[in-house]
Image 1 (cartoon, rainbow, N blue to C red):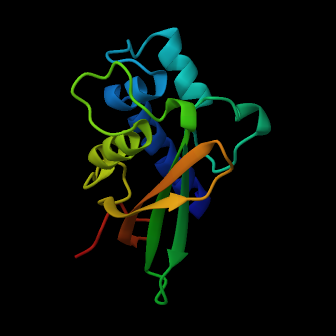
Image 2 (image 1 turned 60 degrees about the vertical axis):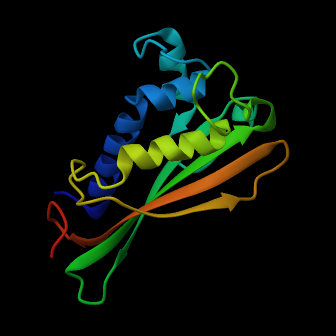
Length: 167
């Protein structure tokens, strides 16, 4: 028997896999362009810096940059539809905000991670939850010496037990 939580786990896993497969995002997390996605460096980033929960363990508080992914769902009054919100928090250490060695890339690491995540996910329909729509990007307060942005996406009219948007 499938539960609503089965859907959420599956959706989050698909989003994590898409992020881990993004050359641009892995490059920004590793700190150099054109990283081999099958390398030890890419593997380590995927296992230690892209997390499917919004909690940071004390041991992760190093100079690493983190991407935290979480999903929230709310039922609508008629219980036929539900809203799904995807939260992606980007946390960067102040010493790694400046991009060094990224030819032709403007801005800082945190903002470029947000840009690449938005480019990767906005408008996608292939996760089985309907069309992801970018909704917000805002600054989140985190302890010094970190800086953080929260990027959110919604699937506003997901049919319960269905496979996408209505209307």
